[in-house]
Length: 341
Image (cartoon, rainbow, N blue to C red; front, top):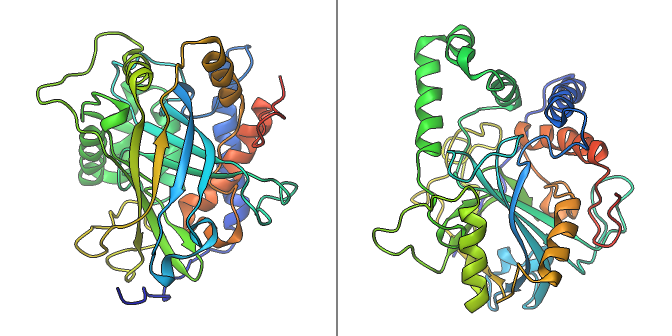
């Protein structure tokens, strides 16, 4: 495989940092509102599912350009996984929603990016079940999150903001993502959706399940069916995913700043770099429940990483401010064993 392009670049508007801080404050206000006087949950992805122990095994014989950071050599990292629904309030699993997967690796060497956490020994990766977002940038995303808190007026507001054609396109993209039935977390594909640096290159990540859904399988009727189904699987055996990267090609096919564009595998093929394994475990046992409480108290942030994997693009830069304020609001910690009450 030839060396990927190094021609990617970020385009940062003047005054963007201050603007993104204002957007993050709006999300924090929504976080406080959703708490209704109780201890605040995450601003988004408030409901966690089946938090579990995990292992990430780096594959041997990777091409030279893929040997970056944690992928430099074959080894296995211990870690934790948190599945989630995307809403800022806890909804039944039967409700259509964005689904997420957050991975925290342990014993990762090297200084981390976030000020004050340089000496942390963990590193985070975040995924959703869509290869791109319906939103080009953070302005559109935050506008939608705030507008969606009052669903009855969402469509008229969308028409005013995006025009009739743009509003219809946005609604269609949202419905396509939300209407996809989720039978099992173990048979779902997850994507970083947004780019990060990969040494001198830029990539997106994909997690592809090694298990396949049973033909004719349907979502369960229980409001907690996603947790129940995964708990049942893990009691009898492991759950595995292949972690792959797609490399930046050019600004037309694989843009850095436009989060609404899917990086197609026909333009940038997947390269497997690791295997994510959830070992067999009993999440309902006392140890599993205790671990689940600890994982729920942790923070997961795409900026909690080494410089080799710095997040890229407007939406990722917005996450830096938003995740920081959300974490402060919840008094969460990125380091296991240091969570605050």
